[in-house]
Each structure stands twice: as C-alpha cells, then as structure tokens.
Image (tube, rainbow, N blue to C red; front, side):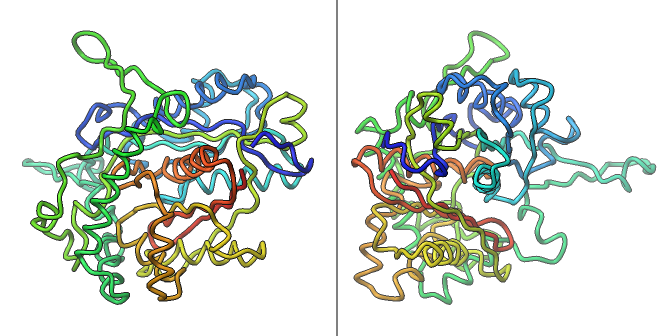
Length: 411
C-alpha cells in the first residue's frame, strides 16, 4: 500500500460505489445513467484527477430495456453529463454481470499496451426501474381493439425467450450435481447477511472508503440521504429461508439464497504506476493480472473457479497464496460450487477457503446491481486487504450463459 513498485505496474488510485438499493426501495425510480454520473463525479473528486486527463471511460450496464427510452451509448451520455470533455473516449459494455470487471480488464490492457495512462472502469444498474415493454409487432405495426400485451424483460432475465434455461434453474441443477444442498445454500445466504452486519458494526462500510452518500430526490419534501446498503436483512433465519419456494423450477435456488434485483453504481480509477507517481497519488492496490473465461451455458456456477484457475496458472500462484477471496454471490450455489472446485473436493481445504471468501458479506446481503458488481467486489476485496496490512487477493464473477472474469490484486 503506497508502494510505487515498477513503472509498468497498473495501480488502483480510487474506488467508490453508491449504496446498493433494493428492487422496490429508495432507488427504484432512479435511472442507472444518473447513478453512473454520480460515481464518475465522485471518483474524480476523490482522486483530484481532472476529467480532461482521463484517457478512457469504460461503463458496464446490461439491462438495456431500463435505459431504452434514452436510446443508446449510455457511456457517452454519462461522461458528458458528469462534466467530461467532449473529446473524451468512452465505451459501453454488456457482458452480463461481468460487465464492470470486463471494463476494468479492458482498461488494464489499454494501460499495459501503452495506449492509455488513466482509465475509469465503472458500471451501473437500476433493476427496479426497468419498464414493461410492448413488442413492435403488437403495437408499432398496428394492433386490433383490445388489450396490449406487455413483456417483463426481467422474467427469467429473458434467457428462455431464445431457448436457454433460466440461470437459476441451471445453477440449481449444477448444485445437485456437485452435492451442494439447499440447506448449504441457505446457510451461506444467512452468513452473508451476518457478515455484512458485523462488518458494518466494525465501520467497514462507511462513507469515505468504499461508499459514497447520495441525495435521492422525492416527489414531495426533502431528498433522502442514502448512505447505507438497503438489502441486508437482520431478521433472516434458517427457518425463514427454508420456507421459501424455489424459483423457475430450480431444485435449490430461492429468493432467499439469491441476491435481489438491485440498483447502484461503482467506479474504479486505474493508471500506470508512472502516472500515479507523477501526480503524487498513492496506489491503493496493484493489479497483478486479469483473466476472462467462458464455458458451457449450464455451468455458470463453475466459471468463477475456471477464471481463477486460469489466472493463477498464468502468474504461477495458487489459491493458498491468497489472503482473501471474493466470489460474487450471483446465487449462493455459485460461490459454493466454485470454492468446491478450487478446494479439489478436499473438505478441510473447502472450509479454509470459505472462511476467507466474502468475509464482509456478499451480493446476497449487499445487493447485485449486475452492471456494477464486478467493480464492487474488486473494491471490497481491496479495502479489506488494506485493513489487514496487505497481501494478495483474488476476485471473480460469473455472468449469464457462463462467462467469467477474475482479477488478482496486491496491496
């Protein structure tokens, strides 16, 4: 931490996110693009970097129906709205839940290649704000008298419309295949909430580090100051979780052992070590390596492990070299199956990995605004490594139809 290292290193100099809101909560009508603007303004404010000096902005968002009325190029729109110059370069990325970590990887590669010195990787989603839509063949090209049929694009996340299984169904079936029971998933979900509350009590989720506070306008009265994740539940219990029905015909996945459909935004500023030294900015962490992965669509729950294994093999390290691990809780089964793969089915090793994974709670508690989550788990990992005095940590995330990303940090 604070070590300038080699001039070719890529370092993180700032990382921030909004609090994450529930599907039907404070941010339910707030645009993802507005959230994206907020984190861009905050990241340049915290670092003191003039937007004119930012070479590229990558922005992950993956529910286009939510921002559809604003047409396209949301990355271009948010950079201009956040006060970036008209000649700034930006790119919108949709790689499902991987999107903002993919943004980070593209920025990392641009700096390593010498094509950029300062990059912002960001992402946002406002799942509660997603509208119902009418198909063109039902409305635009004429319709007879009578009701108009609307489509809920969040139902099964749309995958079944093209013949793919809902990700909850696939993940539940993979859980059975890997011997990860419904009870194990419920226990992990409960632990996620408990770990979040413990971390919050210890001051780990405070404004000024990972979190920023935002003002949420109201139709009447003063705006609400939003400064705390809205998803964590103190009243959760194994008994309550056990009573929940599974979703989409999944054998194990329920609303309780899955994250919510959340809203929020995140941003990470990275730059060359040389540029950080030039600007007098202390690196918060060094990105040692990044790795993408993909696999059979059904086996999304396995792909974080696949990305981690590919990355570790590339750099000549093992999972035992990691002080901390973050595996995004797309469902509890994703984290549990991936850790089981990494543990090579060794029960003692699995327990050891579980104890150092998502130590401050995961997406089941914090929330999973999909476009923002890859950057979120990266900064959560980084800040905890900083609190512990440094070391290596690895974060991985899966995306719909079995895509994956992983990042290796050194603090």
